[in-house]
Length: 387
Image 1 (cartoon, one colour):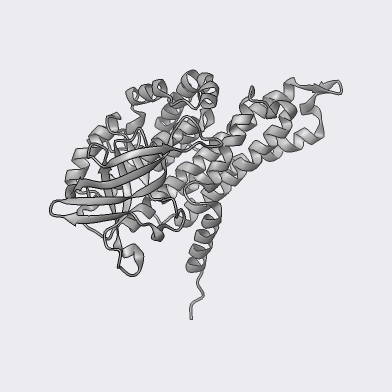
Image 2: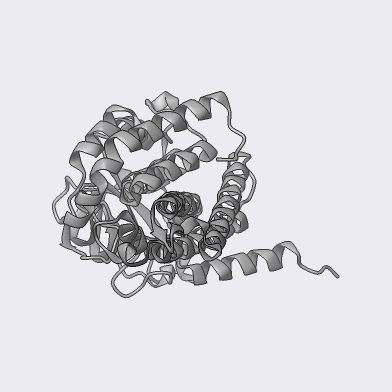
């Protein structure tokens, strides 16, 4: 990792890497193929404070900045990408509460989230809309001191295990433009009428569940309206997604890094025509391109995270990092499979799992087609001709 790191960052990243090598990599392959939730890994992560990494110290967390958190996510994704999904949605919810919540909401939720007692989920998409966020139909109607919620959400990571889900709803369906009528409810599972139903069977990204969430006359306290004001949900969610894109970029770097490590090791062990295949120019070209693209993706992700840490606008940079890192990951794992030849197609080798995980990254947290639109729109605004 050719990044400038502080002593604290080196210690934290080193601790996480040791945990990944010891507790995740040895069991990830089997758990993933069996599609089993990693209860033991999650329990240890809670004990070690992983769930509080991005939560301020005053609420019992570690208060890591975005840059350090991105490094941590890269290390975890290198071991098993699904684990990063478990903590990323949790982090997004803590981000929302810290930055947009009321003082009461921060005091009520963040300490329990730091220990992992509360597990955060995040939900915008619905069965009939994904990237078109303004088309959501889930409705929340104010009834005295409660909101009555009806609707169905889709693609909810941690849908079963989450205890509080930051949920985008429409509180004013007649608002124009539509986003002005959207709000975010910190929906808690403890209230009847809110359940995780269908578990979605996926190509990859297994172990962590992705589910449908159903709200049927579910009553949430009005105190669970994020920030205490209606009409702010779209803005709040978009800010959270920007942070999430740094995480997804870091995941892409981590998965690609693991694919490269497996490939360069295999290239020195596998022989063809009397020599290790790593001595053949065709394989050398692949390894060189893989390593170069990974390093570029890592640096771009780090740059986006540092801009966020500096409090600067970073929508373009986060979009670029997500776009480039995930496309790089997609390319690298495909090349890794080709380096491994027939063994890359076998479920006995880790490359097959990485190959199934990579596609999720190019469509998750906003498809890469959407990323290009966001980047282009931001660039046109930034470089607008005056006069």
